[in-house]
Length: 209
Image (cartoon, rainbow, N blue to C red; front, side, top):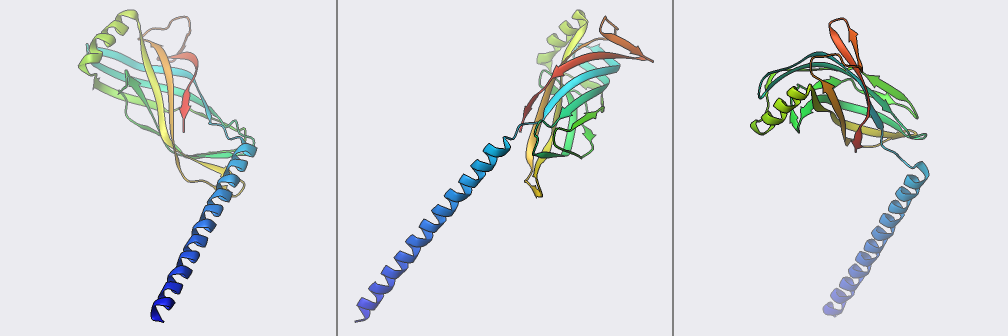
């Protein structure tokens, strides 16, 4: 008699487990469907960035593999979404040369960017007597002889999305803007500003989130 009772209890537990698993699968399916519908309705797009200009206060190659940089950049950012706001949090801007960082991090203050809104930032980037890796030494010497250097301005940080009163978790933001900048001279596209030279670049940036 006791064996029949135990068998009955085991069968009942199996039915309960099957129902729980089925309920969990249905819940996950409905949740995924809701997320896909919201995604399709909102059609979220990544923020757009443009490197508008660079004002050169110092850009010196003192040796074959040593560079000093003082530059102020102007970064234009636009939120292309009509129903999604963007919180920019912990943004660090810096310059690289052939994937090697040549300036310190400069923090861009956190800011909220509303629907279709635009923000313009003008951070200063500094780097004094930064040694360039040996394999970049020849490229740097060649750039110096050509009279211009190809740097990349980068922004790394985190963003959060806002839909109505809902705010998402943090997502990593990576922005990369190529910049071809003359070395210590004012060419046709340069404007002398005091002791500095401002170059109009208007260069689109790649963005990944």
